[in-house]
Length: 115
Length: 112
Image (cartoon, rainbow over all chains, first blue to last red; front, side, top):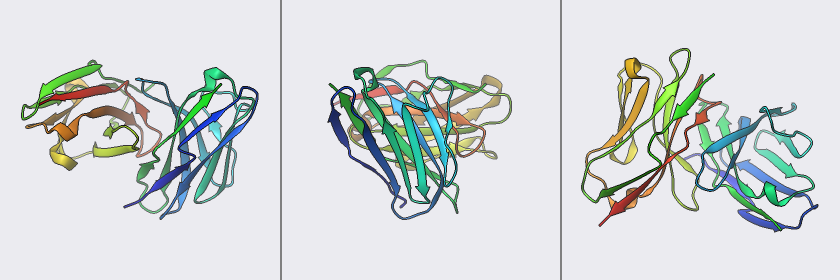
């Protein structure tokens, strides 16, 4: 089956630093990738939609300068949390849409802790 | 705007008992409806989805869901729960197969 990977699976960083999270579709090409944020015991909140080769579309209330998204290829999207603060600590999940089947597949998530 | 409500935050059932998880949605047209399961340390797994046609949808792991337009509901059911079904369950709605919005989730605990 289709697999989406995320790297790293967990990361701890200090306040003020930046951290990059990768999302890869391993066995299919993804024209669209989505980034979600999930707080403990809460639902997934869509942060942004990225299409290969174009700028990401951010949901209302999401700071595009803080959460930089790059979708450089049909198999890779990255989320960079810039100048991280403790309130950015969360579980970040990506998903990717198979360009052929239009099915959406989710990655396992990345746990970010900012100290 | 589309939205999803899962009224039950936490449900506990005994192993072998039947299960029903509730989902109500708000959407202007016929939506795409989904149920996902999230186990600790794992990604979301699609259980089933509804786009059109038969309103009773069969999914994986013995789950089914019924779309009821009059009630704006898409409840998930399983006739006999197994201990391995303990997880977080999310209902989602969207205009297409993507761009979905998730409910708050229902945590299922299974008693031995």
